[in-house]
Image (cartoon, rainbow, N blue to C red; front, side, top):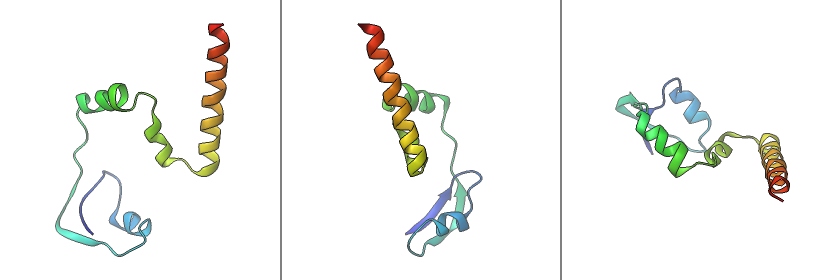
Length: 82
């Protein structure tokens, strides 16, 4: 796999350390362009309004806390509808 872009603030060394195989680096390695305001709006409001994408970044214990808090919120909300 060849790396052609990196997100701002992310080093190739960090990406390589998190990957289970050797990566090739493009001779034209560049930084990923930030999303536009419209792309961010679409992600937040249309594509992932429940913010599920954040689960990709959470460790096991943080993920459990997220689900527990989410479930508690849904239970409280369901009791308020009755």
